[in-house]
Image 1 (cartoon, rainbow, N blue to C red):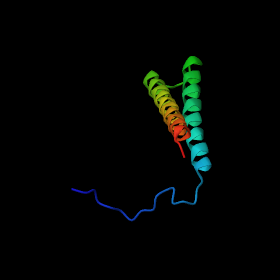
Image 2 (cartoon, rainbow, N blue to C red; image 1 turned 120 degrees about the vertical axis):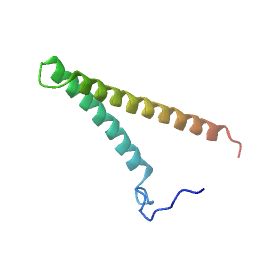
Image 3 (cartoon, rainbow, N blue to C red; image 1 turned 90 degrees about the horizontal axis):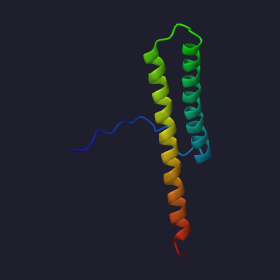
Length: 87
């Protein structure tokens, strides 16, 4: 059974460059890291924040960073494979 198709446009309909998408993804990873740092700093300063919120924010930041690193690794592998191809 095929999934239902929707008529909603995709975010990248060809008008955005790869560089723009890459920059947005890196900015997103950075924002999650900054949010985790801010939550940790609030906890250290004794501000009103729950420990579980700090842990969740930190884990989200960690997962986004790990994902970005794995995507980078796959991109490097693909580049190296293309460079090994004989023309």
